[in-house]
Structures are given as structure tokens and as C-alpha cells.
Length: 406
Ligand code: FMN
Image (tube, rainbow, N blue to C red; front, side, top):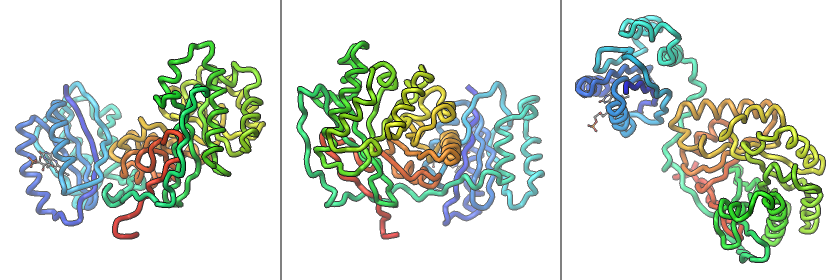
């Protein structure tokens, strides 16, 4: 299928223009053989390239380009399908923007157009050209160092002090995972994640309950979470627990039950963050909004988990204002390489800044993901990069340290 791919990247310091000219001459031949058109713009710092051709060939050449050491921080901006080639001639052409007037470049690009209609009807690819030529998005380019610029070091003093054994009578068990602010070197919260008494994943625990009993079991399990957290000397630290939204709606006296369990373990409601998953909240929003009022009136803070994974995330911010949202792993994954993910996360951050809602990123696995998110303004992170969930224990954190000092 005919595919269009657009990316931008940053040139490496040691690459001269004559090297680029040689590269373009070689790429011209290679693209011609692969039936690909490559239009490359260069502004002295950044490249912007459109590749157009058969899907497999475009993907194969882009893979080579991604591995090329002459540039870094490649961000894919567009990958789309079209009925006809926009730029019929295959091969490669370089425009050095320092030598052209803006309008001239755009006219050149338009002149190369071979499809009668595509470039005239608000074509997205052409808009990307325009934005790059006019430098309109530059403040959103976060240039991050390579992932191996950091090492992740666990403090000896943070080592796990104790591990609580599973209690079969309790009907569930919990793993704990910290949410951290890496630059402040601070654990901002600890999340209790449910497991079966044998230590199996949440899904297994949920599958072990039928739909009649699930809400009561969900509520009761929080008592175990509070007791385990207290036994692990949580102290004044904030604790995040997950709750099914309908537990609040369906179980009479749910909020009082939580308050009693908190008090029994010498904790206070203000240190508890109750997390709800976005797609479960949305199905009965009005009932749920009422139940949340009760929680907030009792002193709890509320977070939306897996934000961005479901159906109506942004609407939720209007209808029910949480203290915190946690951006889902699906959006975080390889964010440093994806223009669409970057744009969505920046919009979420902007919205939450206006609403004074704290944003944290969940499921962070790569140093580059973390660095991009920090650059975008997120300061709280949870994920295997820093600490995996530890069954029955609060794990030590691997704090980032810049190699060779800061
Ligand atoms: N190589 C191409 O074959 N086609 C291109 O359109 C192309 N565009 C490039 C754009 C930039 C900004 C850079 C830095 C490199 C580009 N290259 C392109 C070069 C490839 O990265 C790679 O060096 C080339 O495909 C030869 O790969 P090989 O040595 O692994 O065979």
C-alpha cells in the first residue's frame, strides 16, 4: 500500500554538509531502486523528511535511517496511506533551508506535486512541511541525551527492610510500587497493587470472584492493603489504592468502611489516594460522581488511573476533577520517538496545569521515555525503570544519576 512517512531529527555535531551531499547522492539511487521519493529539508540543526512509496520499502528504509549515527532524536510525525503519490518522481532531493526563502521552498515542494488534488485540499503532509519551514513547533522539540547518559543506582539505605508473607485467610495479598520524583530524589507515594494470596496477577484475583461479590471483595481488600502498608512502616507516606468505581456505588457504607480500616491502622484519610480506572468510571458517571463527593468530603484524594487508555478521558476532567491523573503506559511507550504521542501528552499536561491536577506517568521503562516526559513537564514517575512492584514489601528505588557527574 502506498505509504507516506514524515519524521524530524537532530543532526550530530560532527557531520559536515559535504557528508550530507554524498549521503543524498547515494540515497537518491537507493530510493529510486525501491520506488521511494524522499524529500529532505535541513535548517542547519534539524532534518525533516518525507518518504513516500510502497509500505514495506518505506518501513525498511526508515529502519536504516533510524539507525544512522549522523542524526539523533528521530521523531515520527506522520505515517499515513494515500490513493496516489503526492510526489511522483522517485529518488531523493535535499533543500537546505538556509539558502532558500520560506515561500520559495514551499513553492518548490508544491511544484514537485504530481497528484492533482491531494496537495490542494488541506493536505496534512503539506501542513507538516509548512510548520517545519516556518519553525512553528520548535518549542516542542525536546532534545534529550542518549539513554546511556544515565545510570540507575539503588541507595543501600533504601534496601528492602522486610517482606510480609502472604496470609491465605485475608483472601488477597499486595505488591507495593513507589511513585517517585527522580530529580527531587523523593518517593511521593506508594501504590498498593492487588495480588492473589499466592501472589498471582490482579486479573487472576478478579477472575476468582463472581460479579455479585466482586465489589464487596474489592472493598474488603483495601483493609488488607492498609494493614500491610502499616506493617511496612508506611509512616506519613502517601498510599495509593485502586478501587472499582462501582464499589462506591454498590456497597452501602463503603466510605465509612474505608475510614474505619484506615483508623484501625493508625493512618489518616488525607494520606490515601483512591485511584479509579478511566473506562470503569465513564460507564455510570453520574452515580460515580456522587460517590466521589462522599470520598472527598471524608478527606481522601482521588486519581484517575490509566488516563488516555479509554474513551472519554478529557471529558472526565471536566465532570469530575481529580487531584491526580496517571498517564497510561500505552501513551508513554516510546514517546520520545512518536510525534502523535508527544502531542497528546503535551495537551494532557497543558490541560492539567490549567486545572492544577498533578500528572504522573506510569509504566516508564526506558530512560529516554523518562527524559522526554521530564522535559515536557512531568515530575512524578512509576515504572520498572525506577522500581518494580515488590510483593509484600516496599522496594528500593534505582535513582537516575548522570554518568560522569552533572
Ligand atoms: N538513505 C536512503 O536510502 N534513503 C533516504 O531517503 C535516506 N534519507 C536519509 C536522511 C537522513 C537525515 C540521514 C541522516 C540519512 C538518510 N539515509 C537515507 C541514509 C541511511 O540512513 C543509510 O545510511 C543508507 O540507507 C545506507 O544504509 P546501509 O549503509 O545500512 O546500507
